Length: 172
Image 1 (cartoon, rainbow, N blue to C red):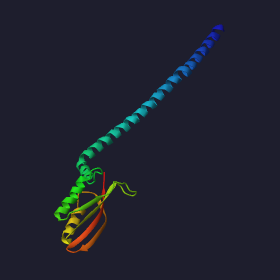
Image 2: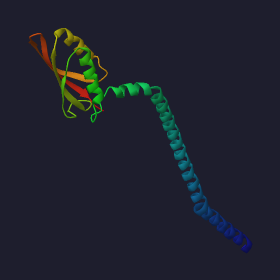
Image 3: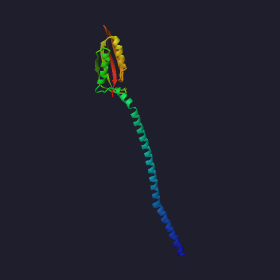
Image 4: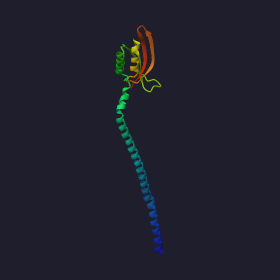
């Protein structure tokens, strides 16, 4: 009976050791494996996201390169607020073709509420023949700059007209 009892005790102790080993070794090991698996899944998702972002950046770079000339043309529509010489030269050129001597009074660069871009307002004044005024006005309207006509005063004078044009030219 003693041998049987020793076998039962040994079996019980072995069962407890196996249970303790399972609880203290196998469970933390399994938990670590599961945590590593979850971490690996997160890293895989991050990798997929980074690949998508890289694809989007590559596509953007490709589109930007394809549209570079359009962007350059669009940029040329806006005046340089610190140096609007190209705009003034354009006005002077249009005036000389129409035989006008312009007086140009520029305003200060400003960003008004409701405007999409900053702007500079100009007052352009001159006098001359009415027949030359319309071609001048058309050449200014069709000019290479983004601008808005704010107002115009035209008065009839002996031998022609005197005019003032109020423009808003948009800046970068």
